[in-house]
Amino acid sequence: MLLTTLLSLAPAAHAAPTLNGEAVVAIPFDESSPDLGLGLGLRAGVPLGLVAVQIVPEAGLTAWTAGDLLLVPELGARVRFGKLIEPGVYGHALFPLREGYQPGWDAGVSLDLTAVPKLDVGLQGGVLSLGGGMAPTVGLSVGLKL
Image (cartoon, rainbow, N blue to C red; front, side, top):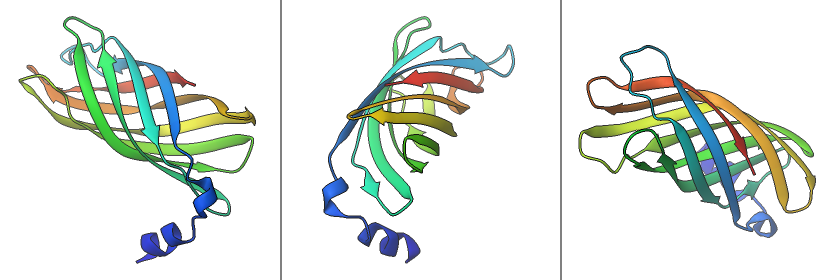
């Protein structure tokens, strides 16, 4: 009910689609977790601008480069607060496209600089969990996005 009310308050003028690219490194918590290497991702979303909060439902694809290429589609959302310097949080469901991997998730915090029109630059850090192989990959993710 509350989410429906908040979404209905979003002005249609803020519905311009967004596209962002990012480079992320996943650092496994322990040696038994497979190393994913560098992740190169692309996401598209539609911001729903409220008074002080921007909710961005998004879908994307990240290619992890360690060993054989692992493609991971994802669905989720970001929530950003403020203007010009925008702290936020994010979360996604992950769906790896390789046999032996199970769905996973990521979640974290971000800080975006939005001073230049049509260009946001930001940093993010969080936790990633992706099931597969002998042990799940659970680790920290640190990235830069444009």
